[in-house]
Length: 345
Image (cartoon, rainbow, N blue to C red; front, side, top):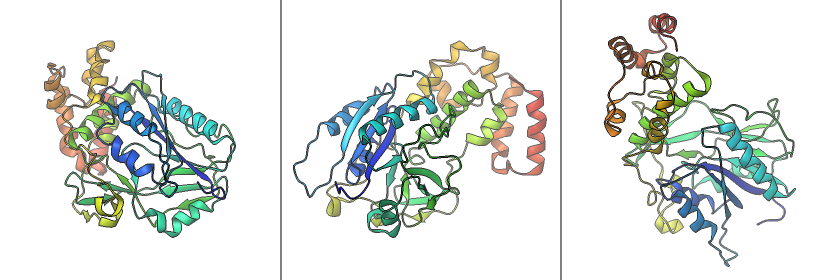
């Protein structure tokens, strides 16, 4: 740890992330000072892997290795605002007043291996409290050979100014991960390296996550099923044009002592997010649930559920699927508006 540089604290929530957590930790402990894992009732071995790294001690001063800290998220429901508040509070306790860079990274997000020799990395190290850094994803694909770009950057790094609260992680869904001020002035867009996003790579998990977000968004915000379908379904669909994944972005056995893909399971058959839905569907009137576009063949078959949708909802969901690639057209948007008025929760 360089006493003249800010410390790096990575704040990461988990819930059944065994498919990727080892690769996340193996890469992140190489550059961070602390990795705080806030786990929410994982049952797939995630906690065991985290504890394995939390118990590791290195006496080689030349080999940087972060301290891994496991804490619990006691909330049984999905609430990103509470989760991030737990992480930020713990991070500031660990920082104990030291100059600190707060990173908000999910378990499927990994800094590219070429990040640390770039000019942007130096800008991060020499930034001042209050600075906010925005990053671009490189969306990795299932074949492990390609990636595609996301359109918008995301704020995942804050040079902590110690102010609480800034009030930007108050949404139950899709809240901000770092406690930066909403009227931020010191913004930097990182272009020299990417955050590798493994989220689009496991195809079964992608489809499960679509169902999960639709269900939770309906639970929390009572959004229109049509609006949610447009927002979530196919959001991680691969575009026609893919880029070759540069070798220098990935950790390798020859150069780094381990292989980036070694700890990643892309063919997960069963995902906890479907369990989350199944465990809660009895709490709601089936007529309301039937409107949600979550009744895919794999979900129905996995839980031996009879499709609850009447013919007109089947027709509506078929329409949504057929028009999803044209959802921004004037005609489709007009039809969607009519359907929202006709089919209400």
